Image 1: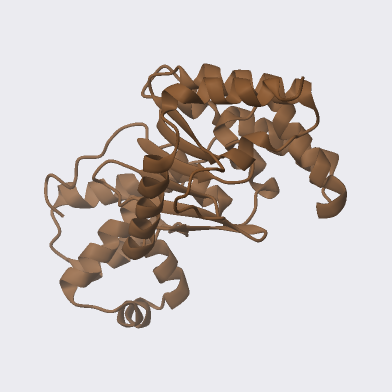
Image 2: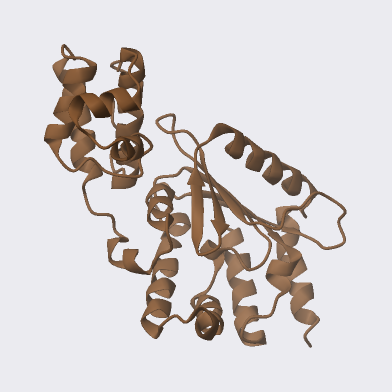
Length: 296
């Protein structure tokens, strides 16, 4: 770890810190020329636990475990670098604001939510529904209510998820360093009727209003454009140099979150192709107005 690496940005969440710590531990292990199996055998750790710590999926509960890893990797590590790792470790164990909702989240969603709050740029494609950070409360509640008998969810599940989604919108509306959002929605996502025309009119107005924010860019990909498009929704998160970009993709009853280079690059190509074919952001409001006029 260099002195440049030891500079820790302020106000980062526990998930971000956990991934930073895992990244540093992996670098130290590889510099020492050790495999995960060798470290696990030497210290009596679970191989699975150690692997998940390095990719930031699991925390390292005891500071004594971190001390043991640092001693093994570099017994003469400078005090400053040790203190930096210990600080990362302490901050990785802090509670996240969304912790009360964890029981109502699908698998891997807590990891994504923790990373989302510390991202600088979000690029997203949504083919089926209005993108989550743009949804109104009425639209969100309608989606969960329609799915309730099929998914066998509870009223509490619905209310908790509606509340979480509304709180997440603060990412793009906060006054201090708001997230830069670039989102593409297929025409089907905004055309599909949810609840009724009043809910949809309110939703369209909210999209237009949010699109006026300097940090928000919203594009529609019309049906009649012949271009590449994917049936799966995805979100790309970009951070500072401290972490590699990640991509999140919805799957059946869970989500995938990875920083694997090939997967990230594949989704960047997807986004760029659809962005170049979508309507310019300045056309979004007119497009939605024309859809609404079609109901009259």
